[in-house]
Length: 139
Image (cartoon, rainbow, N blue to C red; front, side, top):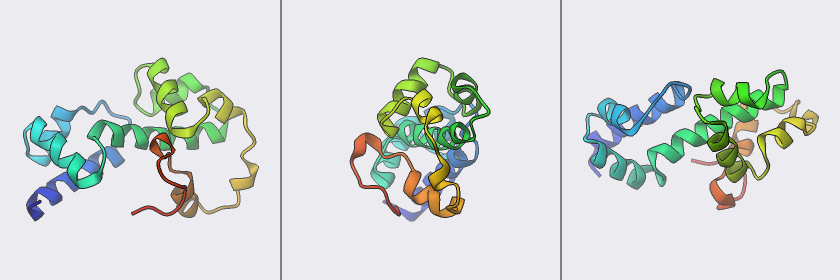
């Protein structure tokens, strides 16, 4: 893959990391990457191993986990705060990635991880799609 394409794909990925709560779709992200939507989707998957939608949802679920651990927002409030527009889709995706429902995750005791610095916790708490990899540092 040409270096210029990788730079543009990273720009789109950075947009997802920063603006995950905004309404982002493949067309908007392709514009950021200066690519057609089809080429962007194929190139993103080839470069990062997952579709743009999957990557964005992982970011959203990652942030949702942090908000749910705080415990001061309802599951519905968290759903909308991270940019999801459907509580059902959010709950389904959360359960798929985390292994338990958002309500169960919110209700669980999170004191064990409270002393772990956020930069370290992020490596171990990142949602893993379908349990395909063991928790731990990722590239």
